[in-house]
Image (cartoon, rainbow, N blue to C red):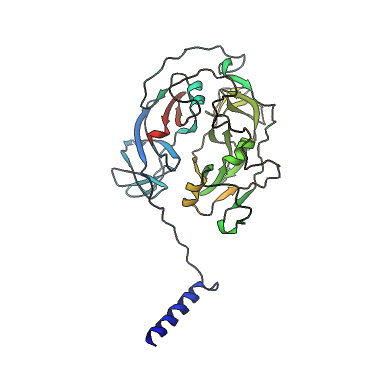
Length: 368
């Protein structure tokens, strides 16, 4: 009887704990152990830099190593994502370049213009670029430019009509709750789907490739800052830049297969890789690029189980679960001409690239 009484008490306590009337305290879900982040300390365009990533998590980021005049030394960590590295002082740093704890807590590393994409677009746009861990290659030094343009004519082509690809100017979002998704319908993203995560002033939004494949540009606002989240499906490259109050569209023209945006104020053309105007009244000006994280939906939902993400119900009629260019990512075909072809890697191998002062350096994902 004594054991029966204890069992009744235990069951009663469990039932009380499950009652909807009892408030459940908020908890922080610790990040699970995972593959160790690889850290590469390097030098580019006169700057000491650090590149940190994990191929298994599909994450690579890059920052300047110098903080307030002090050169920091980093090492990777094997758990605690989104923390990716620590420095010699014992400070931990996350994927946003923020010091989350330790002596330097609250500090911020300066992000670099960097991101993933197909090898061919970087090697064509920056002929003879440095490939980490590989020998250099020779490339022609000069090409003819188009009148009024600041890039070589040989790399420019027309992929679609002007504004034919519709930018998304009023994106609709949902807050993802996995237990609210119908098992029959399922969610439109799988764990392997790539997403662009933007965090500004404490607000975080997720922009899936599945949406960007069709619109290429999403004009939005994050943390009170108007931004354009851009993605070029033919080159696999994402960039995020500040837009003030200006809306950006897809010109239909491409450079080395990379998307050229246009602004709806002057209709000048902007090269996605650099956020630089290469044709029109604002030629030579550059947009303020914003740091973003590119990873898989599965990786991100382990960090944020209920993220704010672009909905697939945009009223566009697009089949967001499909890719608009068939088997393009896996076939050997490059649709439009390239300024230069570099055979040190397969053309569509996905790599990580850093661009600084017109110089580009590429890191194979196998390095991480």
